[in-house]
Length: 141
Image (cartoon, rainbow, N blue to C red; front, side, top):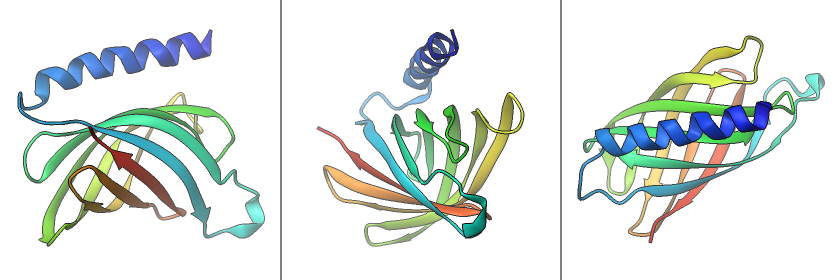
């Protein structure tokens, strides 16, 4: 039943994303890979496989939706907004924040710093949370 709920949430979020995105934008398909936790004694899950979509809303604002296996070894769905005003060549740096399921409460706010590097068809995101660093790779066709 929970898996069906996650799938429905993601479907509604993807539909919503189409209304806020630019008509000419090309979405990124994002794969969450893993994370590194600073507190090594807690035994967090660090293989955080997942899939999502990332869409440019403006040059500095992106919308992110997806699902992944979180650090508590539970399935999570997320919706994030990121603002990355610092640009240097293909690099951008900023903040991301939004709700996610599967943590301590049914829905928690997650967020932190984000570093993104993008080429024409591939890129990666490094998410920096106070407790961990996570890696996502992305592509578009």
